[in-house]
Image (tube, rainbow, N blue to C red; front, top):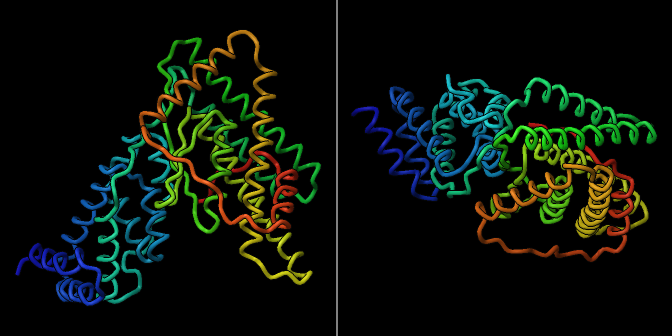
Length: 376
């Protein structure tokens, strides 16, 4: 029996059926034939490449596998992605290459027996096979003359300021550091916009995906939408797949990622502290308290960010800047409409805890309004 025949028989038995018995049958076939390992890996790379054709990116697939399966499957997936991209890391753009750089390949043997490994491989391939098609992301086009090394230094400096702001125990220092980071973000975005306008560069918006994970994902999606709007971007939430697609120009997309991550860190820390105080007073409605807390936090942060954004534009609204920003707003809206011709609105439900709402709003008032890059 050829190795290809073994793999085909295992796939026929396991990939198109939901039962554990079918999975066991397929895994038994693979485990009994060590010669099929190379073919099994090659077929896995084909499944990964098919996911790219359906609009997925490395970070998206890793996030889904981590959500639905476990660490062994993530390691198997990581090895497949890196093998599929061997010698071709930068052809799909800087964001794609950065996602590959964040992947850490684990040991190939995974310290398990052949049957368990084969079972995990089939579970992973079954998930990859069933990934739906999603909107492909066009990477933002950078204006001619933009210096990537200088941009990297700027963003590195911003991240350093924000890391210090979140780590310090002194509120005044944290506020000063966050304010400086915010200033650098705004300056970086405006400089990029003016450079593109003055050089008549073919600068265009693109998109990125940001995970919006349970629990309380509706409130988190509202928070991300507020952050996107304040940074001249637009966000569309895919509830079923646990991510939002953010459309905007590259400096603004970077700002959205930084700020959203930081606000989630701050919100979680504030919610944990407030919840502990509530429980010390005898209350036990943890879920409703957290839901109401995060909803209020997102709502209040949205108001704060909108006010800050308006103030920044008013301060800088001289000469050529205002028409440039207006043109960028139109470009972002047009790009969004092409990607998502049909969208619907959703409502935040389950907001029933008055104490949670007030605590969340108060925490939003105390929050620093910039944050650091998401952790892998």
